[in-house]
Amino acid sequence: MELSKKQTFEVKNTLKIGHMRCSFEDKRMCNQWMPLYRSNNKTSSELKEIQKVINEIMDKYNTFEKVLHECEAYHGVEINYMFGGLNYNADLFLVHGNFNYWVRLIPQKGEYNLYISVYDKETGSDKQ
Image (tube, rainbow, N blue to C red; front, top):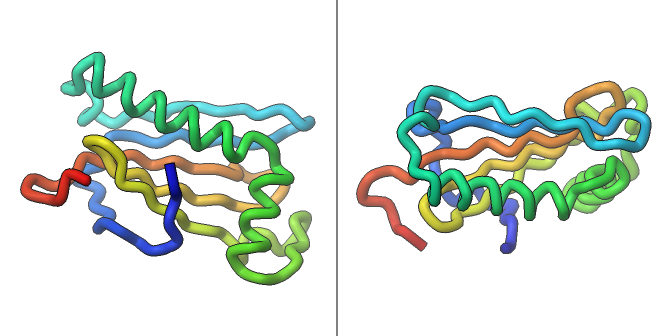
């Protein structure tokens, strides 16, 4: 699974299913899934597909240091994560299976550091 810096789909709130948000407090990952009403009409296999992809992304960015490193590489600078991290978010995109994923990494202590937003593909879009 390869996340892309290039936005490969149009982000539309009308297609949003929900998002996962994560923070790293005391070196532990804390996360919460925030479903939208669109998730109510998903099949069990679709929800498992979403869960599998989200878990793979969370495994890739399972520490604050990995989020920070990715953001520093994305912007090509060393980031002061105590005070300046909000200026250096990294947005990554994934088209996988039946869904689109927008990943936002935020290298700032005291904030949510990882958002994974999940969207339905538009009808007629390429089913890569």
